Length: 156
Length: 206
Image 1 (tube, chains in turn purple, orange):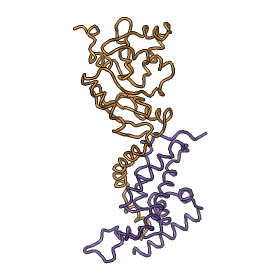
Image 2: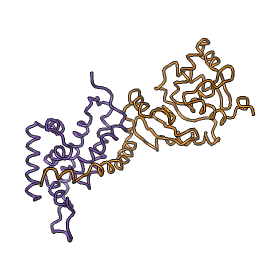
Image 3: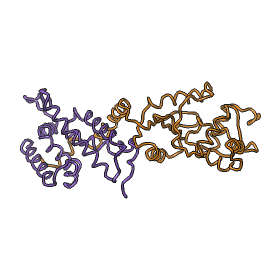
Image 4: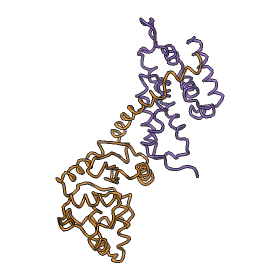
């Protein structure tokens, strides 16, 4: 009881797309977000006929998005290309107000970055973050705490 | 750094706009990878925008613009597959043939049909109905007789009313024994339009 066929995929996309995009812009950065978005929803579509709707498909798609985000970082780490987000010399003129925050978020370890985005951008409670990231609630809290500490240090 | 700064990094409105644009990439990749089980799209027509659904087995549904699309999509998800995705490409053949039909250039549809939204009885009624050619009409009683259920004219009427693929499966060609148009799930004005388009002169003298 309580589980049934998921909604038509178009509706699922419509209901969850903005949230997933918001998470991914923070978790992988604006340059990679569209790619990660496409990958996330294609993975979901592949699995979709086997999914049971437990009323919390938003957690399911965030789990896929988190995994995709963390994989993206691993794939980039293997490639020796430089990170475009952190310039080695200050740019001429003032940075956009959120530039420093963006750069600091981009420099976080991927799991901390995802955890911070889930907690402080999407307002998810810790038990949910633990489910989404596939870790204990304690580990979820530790990741958010460590991520925020680093951000505070780098963005004064 | 305050934790409340983070939401300013990506506003919900920006994320929404960006997601809607990226949805197109998702749909295109889904089509390319063969992940669409029910392709949906719309077709402009003189009787209002039509909502069409095509599966790999063929055309599954045509809806009129006053039908509730959400409940049609729910029906596809339950009866066919929840992988319901918009695709202009996959619905293009249906669009082209409907355009030709409404332009008077097509009298027969060359489309394979997905019968899964029909019960066996409805399927039988539709097969009999499909024998009535363009420009001609038949009656509920004649269809009932044709499927060897001569007493079932009323059930035939109900079956025609549940036709998931109107226009292509020509339930509009079935009328009352007295010559009245009787009924149509899409509304009598649409039935009349289709019969006029097909031009049966005996129906609308003068």
